[in-house]
Image (cartoon, rainbow, N blue to C red; front, side, top):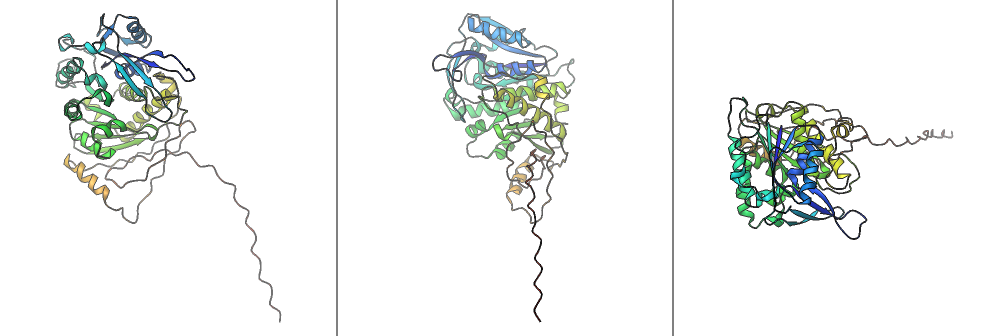
Length: 411
């Protein structure tokens, strides 16, 4: 069972074609992720506070409709948080938040449950709730407490802790102070799911892979970088210190808006782990290349589907599975055994490639999944599965003209 912590608010969205007015829809990154998990048929609970106002009732109904457990929810007379969303084609959604002294963000440390349910296998946290007090300190206390928990009823020890910063720069007053706390939360996490926009904000001078390697050395076992239409990449650190790198393509569907895409990806990835019996610290580090690829592609498909709809409306498990996963050729190679060698690997990648390289044939893809364009391959110590590439349409062969025989010489 997965517990989601963070904001639960109302997104006020102007629907396509509507000149005036806004449509109130349930939102908030951790809340949306809980909905995505529930719709995929995985047990999930939301930990937090909801208002007793009519917006709070909309959120409560959303929980019931999507089988999200309410046992860890308390109600308050404080108003619900509101987020006005501006959507423009080919741009990230822009937000204006009204969240001073509101219900969901009023959670205090002394209001935390003394003990989470015994079947809690994963705790998800993050988003802009981690920039506002008192909820930021309350969730931080919960994460630090549960990250080191050992109990007789859970032989694997502490639950998996998954962090999605979902950074909203408008909510951060001091970038350096936020980065310091961010790295503290990263160190307590098992999984860090971070978008390209988040990386650009937190480590603006680093490329994607360099930033992911930096995060991996801080403590998480799995770092996932999401790249929108370019799919996703993961680095998994095993017990022997080796690192497995895997990438998976996105699915080419018409985009209505991208609200809830990252939340849906995160929820679908965790749901896959739970459905496959991989949601524990010991089994997570043992994922092979094919398993990690399948988890990433499952999450990519779910995110692509939600982008084809208005607002955060995650798909069901049947909808995701109806988009077939392409065949995956498993080629796995380990890096050197120590964490510092990850940096050495990055330096090695910068060297010119030798003249002769062996090409890896991409897996066949069914028409339902069109991956993003494949970037130029880099020579690294860890091979990643080739991005799926649809077969190019064959051009009709040009008819060849018979060669003319030379005229006989006159004698």
